[in-house]
Image (tube, rainbow, N blue to C red):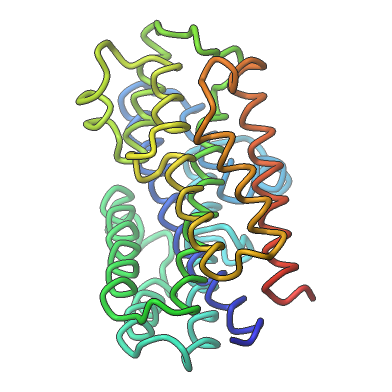
Length: 306
C-alpha cells in the first residue's frame, strides 16, 4: 500500500473523529452555559478546536458567539467542524481508489450539506440540532466503514486514525479542570459535580458511570473511568488497546509498535494512584506528549513525512 494513500486514510478518520468531538464539546458547553449562565463553559471547546491562543489572537475575549463561530464556521481554522469535514472530504477523494463507493458517497454528502453553512443557517437549525447532526454523520461514517470494507490495510489505517484522535481528545477533555485532582479526589462540590457530569455527557458515558459507580460523580471516579476502564469505548485504555492491536497487525517490527506497546502497558497495568501521583493535569500532559510522539513515529514509519 502506498504511503500517500495510507496518509490520506489516516487523516480522513482523524478529521471525522475531531469533528465529532468538537460537536460533543460544543453541545455540552451550550447546555452548561444555559443552565449556569457561566461564560467559562465555552473555554473547554477551544482545547481541541484550534487552541485558546489562536482564538484570542483573532476574536479576543471568549464568548459564546466567538467560540461557536471559531469552532464551527471558521474556514481558516483547520480544527473547526467545517474545516475538519472539508479535510475529510479531500482525503476521501484522494483515497477513492481503495475505499468503497458507499463510504465516498457518505463523506461527500456530508460535505455538500455543510459547505455553505453560515451563521444564519446555524441559528435557524439551532446549535444542539447541528451538533447532533455532526455526531450522527460521524456514526454513519464509522458504520459504513465497518459494514463495507475488507479488513485489509486501508481499513486498519482508517481505524488507526480514529483511535489516536479519540485518545488525544479524551485526554484534553480531562485536562480542563485537572489541576489538583488526585486518586483521593472522591468528593465534589456543586460546581465540580456539574463540570464532571458534563465531562461524562460529552463522551456519552454518564449512564455508564452511574451504572458502575457506587457513589456520586467525583473527579477521581471520572478520571478512573476515562483513563483505565477498557470497557468504556472512549477511555484512553480502550483507545490504546485498539491502536496496539492495529499496529501489530500492520507491522509488529516497526518502532511505532514498540512505542504504542509501552504507552499501552502504562494504562493496562497502571493504578490510578500511581498514574495521578503528580495530579491529573500532570498525567494528561505526559500522556499527550507520549501520544504525540507515537503519532510522529507512525508518520515516520508508514506515512508521508513531507
